[in-house]
Image 1 (cartoon, each protein chain N blue to C red):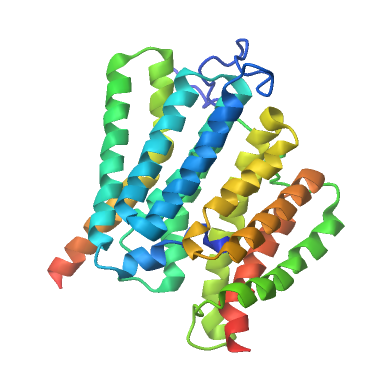
Image 2 (image 1 turned 180 degrees about the vertical axis):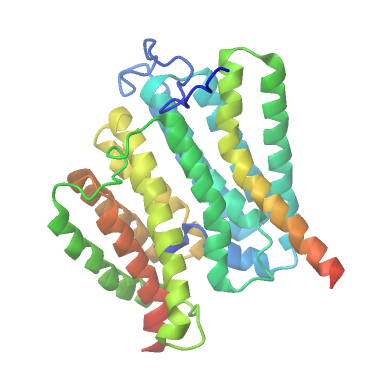
Length: 79
Length: 277
């Protein structure tokens, strides 16, 4: 159940051949968030500065996911 | 040399201290109820598309929802409505993070930790930004602490009921303490505590001043919507009722302790005990 907010759908997706493209979609969303953050920094002003702080809520975990993707990729190559 | 200024207890949100556009969000003419309904339907649709049609499309809908709530919270809302919208962003974020992780090479047990840790960081950032006190989020034992014991133990019964519905594969090869302690600890922290902190802690605390009594129903519906991926209507109904039960317990006791333990025990029974009985 309940656990499983985090893992409900992913068992299907992760095991399928489309896992790579799903990860890519997540990276696209991360890029959109990062672009939003850059624009908000460039715009300046109170609300834009705060937008950057709000976007960080999404940017940080997706960056961690991206770093893991890179780490797993590098590990595969080194093996 | 100047001393560095200490960090504020919470970062002031845009418009904080100013009159709130949605101070009475349920008042006639307010757009917020419609917006919240659309968001709920959007999350449900994104989950449905992810599970049944096209995972990438579902994920893109989640991404669009995330951007929408963050932009809307920053530029259109103030005060409690803004806090609610920021915390609601954690719902699409859960799916975005869980599907963006390269999990295939890892044991199932570690999936919860790999997904849960970044979400814990996000939840912390949302907490900091919204400025709730620990007591607001139920991060305390509460005055009715003896009630937490039966609440926590209810998790075993809930786990049994859910096992009858889903009959999932176990997380470990066999039933022994040596094999089960680490998965149990992972489930305790990254499913029990984390998910209760997000839904019954942050979202419920943010929903209460905006939606009043409907807040617990709304958060429970959102919680259930994120279980559409299990592809079981019965499980959806079960999860909604359990979410509602947990929400009412937290509203009454103002503590996440009992429900976090119950949530963890449900999953420990479901994935570590019942498959071997």
